[in-house]
Image (cartoon, rainbow over all chains, first blue to last red; front, side, top):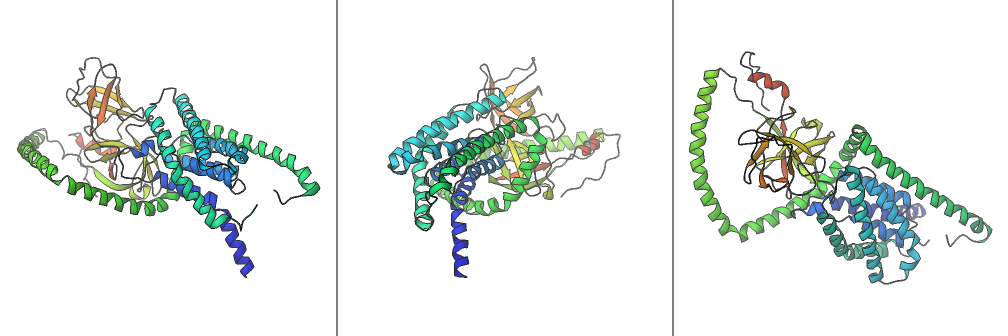
Length: 173
Length: 293
């Protein structure tokens, strides 16, 4: 019985990266009372997928990243597939560079995230501009990048706490 | 992977890498395919999205509850800080509105008298369904909001959504429990409008900026800053005369500031406008009984 319980607990904890990302997706969609926050709201899903694809790439699979992006697309009302595309790319970059980040400090991680957001947001901007064949305003996208950089440490802290509390040790790869 | 050792890992590793690469390309292709599909076949995508919104609506409704409470506390603190200014503002506004009340009473009497003269039916009255915004953070590329009412409340696609003071947007997708509102500022929003003074027709085009553009204005019109824009009712999905905004700039591109503060949306009303009831305005037709919910 206890073995079954342990296994169930293990399974649930293995879902933690995906579940925490989904929670962050929902958090990012909430109608917070700040004026115009929704138009510059940073993609919390991007932060989560980046974090987990570096630190627990075994639990944050590429399909998981794709599905999280699809959920975000469904709920945010943007073109279906756009966030899915971005998160799959983020996951690929995270996993391919994870050896560099695993031993390095938070500052290095933050800098890498800055590069990533600085590439992904303009890329989405370009794609949507292309789809509508019209240049979109750049100010909200820029504000989104800056806000994402400012809020990343908080999300990093939260996710690393989660990881240390629930995933470290017992779920060794 | 470290636990695997010996021959099997040696054989499996390149195979796994290949599989990984294949999966990456497959998911990339799937994403691009979906993006193209959402451009080509909108109804299917809308359907899928409405189902998604229905599924997530209970979760969002529950999670949005404490957010509403926190917002209320912030609003309360705000009220206390600015109570003096607010009081002054309200008093001057009150004086002004009392004058308007006089005018409105007189006009109402005039209107009733003229209607009697024309033997026109009673004024069309709309009914509303009120819903709460449960999600709005679409990021920097869309201007939409999710409302916790759907077909079960009588909401239909295309209906006008009214906030405090006027037009907010229209229902773009509707599920059983949730509806997505396309705000007037969104890139995909095209709203048939007219200048309140003169009734010149135009189209209000959203471009994701806070101030949508007034396009296709008829040549005779002389737009000026401060002019009010209302819905023209063309298209028949909602009535004419809903306040939309006011012209704020006319140099080159004409831009309009929406009357409703779209940065803060809370409770919104979906206007139940039944097109068939327009017949009632035809004096020769027998007036159907008007239902009000």
